[in-house]
Structures are given as structure tokens and as C-alpha cells.
Length: 600
Image (cartoon, rainbow, N blue to C red):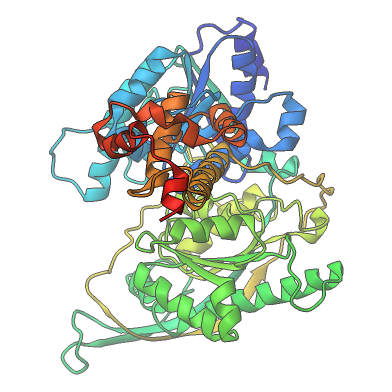
């Protein structure tokens, strides 16, 4: 990246903020790796701090630095770790990854870290941070949370030596300005406009058309499903509320019935029909790829293709999960279909398994996995959502547009998206098809770009208290896009991220301490009584000067090596004077003899 090279060489010292407006799926997660590797090597910064909007994205940031292909291409050996609000979050590495929520919970900790080291601050999906309003003002809980994030992030931004803002949708659906970005003075009748020529700001743009031309993303094939829906207007008891419909979804123009018809369709029979189309398309794709790979029945492999189902709400998501599992044998359904919503305790485990392992092949979510999910095996999306904001829809579609390094030649890959054929989605789809060079350019009131995308307002809630009755699908049509692009190089598997390595080493340390305790009690090397493993953990902490919970990776490895050469029972004297271990100290001073105990 030429801009980073110029900053590293001292040729762009006035740049304080880099704004990277990269189309969703365009590989913006590589920019922090490029920037950190160049700027740390040049001595311009000492550490990178990467802040993401959700906990599920922290591991992906670690993986970006650990990717062996990029380590080789960039010639770097930097590692970062997924950190909580703990002392020394980097633990001797090149930096750490945290979340907006964590910064909001401990702003002083992160501001102090940024002041202690010259820091490259990476703010991922910066559009989540609005310019905060007055604290305590009446506003929805999600907007109040976003305002709290912004108030906590602002001091961290001010303390950073250099800021890198990342986003594929640099406009908020609520029309508010984004924290840290410069804007032109407000003008009557016009929304906020970024000042791309502001002092200290450098802009990197990467549009969808550029990404397609450079074969960085897949084009989208849309499967538009039309249908009819009926509902009760303003009541829940048939006979007391008027029945409305059936009304078509794909009526051509936006009407007063468009929203309630879509709301009904996503909760009744139409949803099952659309889900079935996506499910069977995924099965056909996986069967074809299994045949191409020559896999035996029951044999698993990466690159077969996966299905992402985006539901309108959590009750609907649970219903879709039951439907999908009902189409499979019981054991296969439990293994192949997982649910990831904020109310599920194993949501992060489900996301990680969906991303990193051959199974599960289907993930049902609401909004938890639509933005930032790096799962290149997703080939089919069931867009069972009534949100029609262009930035939101672009983020959702981008889950399927990543090139799958295990999916075979590029010409054999495609992103297939099934969606309701309502006029609002059709408008969005026409714009995207135009960007891909496959449609006739529609009339527009203003241009859209990666920096200022068009916004279509759409409230994701019950439209006026209607009661859905029934719906059905009446027709499916495809818009096929088949560009000729070359096959990408196969990617090598990424090494284990630092936080997982730390966890593994801590578990090995705990097991080694417990093993010595069991062996010493069995061999009568120490007096019985109390929790010996607990005392041995205290001995290890005294000997090494630090508990394993706060050790760096090299320190954890050194602790394991020390345990392989030494017995903790020989260092129990380190606990002398500690009242918590007075009994064991008295036993040692009384010259406890193992043979006397054995002779009883």
C-alpha cells in the first residue's frame, strides 16, 4: 500500500487518520496487517490496537496476523492477541484486539495503553460509532449503547499516534455523523457529507466494481421468490379484525401493503418455501463438489459450500432451525445445522465451527453473523429479513461473495442469494447488478459509492400490529451473472491464534501441576491434607514471580520447561510465612518422615 509506505518513509507525516472505504468482502481485514507490519518495522508506531464491534470478530483479527501467506508476502512475524480488560493486554506481542464494549467498560485502561506506546489504532466498522449526543437523552437502547461506545472511544482515538478507520458502509441508517470523521458544514435539505479533503485525512477507496475487476470478490446470482400473503389488520381474533389480502410481494411499485405483506411472508408458509429453495440449492452444490472431489459417503472436506440463513427475529430463527433439522435425519440435523443468536449460550462456538470446520454446513442467525463474518465457504444465503437498508443488505450479501480457496476454480464458484421479490429489494438488486456490469443503469437521484452509499430507510419491526395469517410462494426467477475470472492460489491453513495458544499452555501447566501433586501424594513425598494442587500452584507462582493467568506466551513456555526439570515439592519452603499454608509449613518443620507414615 503506497500510502503506508509513504508514512513509513516519513513522506506523509501530516497524515493522522487513514479512512479505508472498502466494499464488503473486499479484504479490508488485511489493511491493519499491512499497516502494522510496515509502520512497526519503520519505527513509526510501537503497537497496534484493533477494536471490533463484536466479540466473534476478535479471533478473525488474530487470524489475519497469523495467516502464513501474508506473513510470507509481507515478511512479517507480528502477532496480536484477543484481549479482555486485563493488565498488560498485549502480553509482549505486537498488540491486541478488543471490542467497543470492552473499551466502554474500561476506557482508562485502553487510553493508558495508547499513551504508553505509540499506537496504531484500528477502528473496525467505524460506522457503528455515531457522534455522541447529550448523555441521558431519550433514545432507544441500541442507540444509547452506540453513544456510550463513542464517548469511550473518543479519548482512545485522541491518544493514538495514527488511526486507521475501516468500513464498507460509510453511512449510518439513522443519518447521524460518524465519530472521528470530518464533514462539510451542514446545508439545508442535505444530509452529512464527508470532507475527503480535510487536513490530516487520507482516503483509500475500493469499490465493488474494482473488487470484481481484480477478482477479489464473487459476483452475486439472485434468486427472487415472489409470493402472496394475508393478515389481520389491527387485531388478533378472526372476525374482530378485517382480513387483508392476499397481496403480492412483487407488485412492481412500493405500496402500503408491501411492508405488512413482507412481514407476514417471513413468518408463514412463504418463509418455508424460500428456505426450501436455499436448502436444496446448497444440497445440490455440495453433492456436485463431493463428486468432483471423489469423496466417499460420510467423508468430510473443506470447500463444499455452506448456507447462511438470516432471519427477521429470534423466534423466527428458532423456527427456521427446527424446519431445517426436520428435513434431515436426526443425527445429521443436530450436527449440520447450528443457531447463532445473542440469546444462545454457545453462539460464539457455533460461529467458530461454521467458519473453521467442515461442519456445520448451515448457520441460522438474525444479525450476529451478517457483518464481518469471514467464512469463505458460504455459497448460499437465505435472506429472510425485512431490513432494506442498502448498507445492511450489502454486508449480508458479502458473506457469500468471498472467494473460497478450497472451493475449486473461480469459474466454478458463485454467490447465490435467495430473497423475497419485493420492490424495495428489487431496487437494491438493480443497483448492485449495475455495479457488476449486468444491468441497465437505473435513474438515480444521487450517485452511490463505497464512501457515500445510498441509504434506504426501513424499520425492522411489527408494521402496525398486524397478525400474520398465511402466505405462499408463487414463482422463482434468477438473475445469473457468470464472469470469467482466473483461479486463485490455494491458501495454506493459518496457525493457531495467540489467545488459543495461551489457553492451551495454561491448560498444560495446570495438568502438569496436578500430575506432580498426585504423584507426590501417592509416593508420600509430602504430608497429606488440604488441596496439594492449590499449594503447588502457589509454589509455582512464587518461584516464577508471576501467576500463569498474567504470563506472556514465552513465559508460559518457560514455565512448562521449568516444570519438566524440577519438582514443586522441593520448593515448598517458598510458602513459609504465608498463613494460608501454615499447616504444611509446620509439618515440614516437624521433620515429617514418609517412612513413619508408611509404617502405621
